[in-house]
Length: 350
Image 1 (tube, one colour):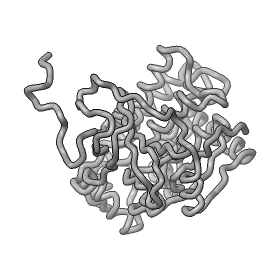
Image 2 (cartoon, one colour; image 1 turned 90 degrees about the vertical axis):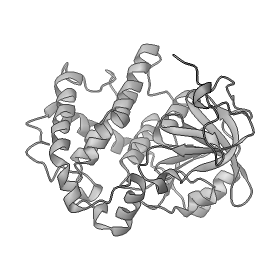
Image 3 (cartoon, rainbow, N blue to C red; image 1 turned 45 degrees about the horizontal axis):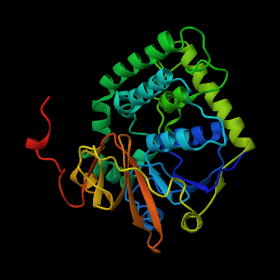
Image 4 (cartoon, rainbow, N blue to C red; image 1 turned 60 degrees about the horizontal axis):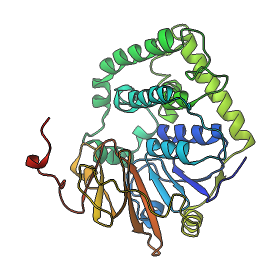
């Protein structure tokens, strides 16, 4: 495998379905990386030592540039990692379709409804500490009764989503959504959800609970699609597995590396926040329904601000300068401890 410096470190844990999709992406592209396994709940001491407070997984470091959220990770690797062929299309329209499919997976109900299919006997649901962590994130206390309560709606939506894949997206006989001979970015954006459905309960899957629905008789194309990805990924990873490293190794590797991106990132003057380079700002992920989750934020000097990403500079516990990158979707960027800079009267009327 070709290795582009600086080194890459992926922080994830085995049960993370979003972490799995990121591992797919790295492996399918042939990108060498180091794997640092973290806890499945907060706190995560290795990220605290890097001054990263983003609470979801995965997080990926390329040198001293640290990317939060798989969408942010994959977007930057597609644009900036050039020593291996991309998974995405070079055609602008097709790139737009890829982005729409990714949005469907995360924000179009596909992820949320599939999560509602998790059963009370699923692996992590057996651990009180994990349930406490999810309660902080979502503002809802998971319980057997609560999980059962949303199942009928979730299954109704699952049938809609499975039908779309089976009778529309794969109906022309294609092996991959991208239409090629190998999985493309569209497959990475969507397939992980259906792979999640088909996994055993120990991996937070739900195939055991709904065999009348999740079977080859109902969805032969979809099931074959999921199996193809597993075969391709397992074969590729067996040839080039990630290098597993400890927390201490991960911090040392990152702190001793160079930055990956340009020395000075753009800060767009037309950004609605009105923020300027060097201001102390908060990056707040808005995908939490609880005050405790919202209040877990990353704070630092504004070093980059565009339509698609926000970047701050901060220091690790050892005083080493690192940059933390967020996407802009479902993220608020404000003065540290403050509110959005523009008042209601200053927002242009449509």
